[in-house]
Length: 112
Image (cartoon, one colour):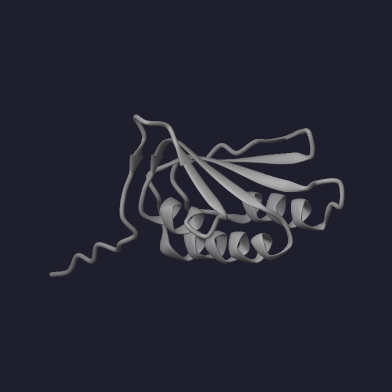
């Protein structure tokens, strides 16, 4: 998953794009934003179908923890489903592109 961030007027932008399998890069950005006194809030731009449960939950918990210290805004730019919805649902506010697809938090279990 390609992730980038930029700082616009004390609002840190963190992109969550593609499938979620490794949350370490985004978690590092969340921790840095939380600890940087110059950052007054965080904008997550999400376009992700979700992914693995464990890293999605790590992101959800980190965003919930970040929200205690700074305002968190999520923008669903395309798809925000499953694990990415789980990650973003803890924000103070979620905004969405009118054409975005926002899906459920769920797990599909397949077995023999």
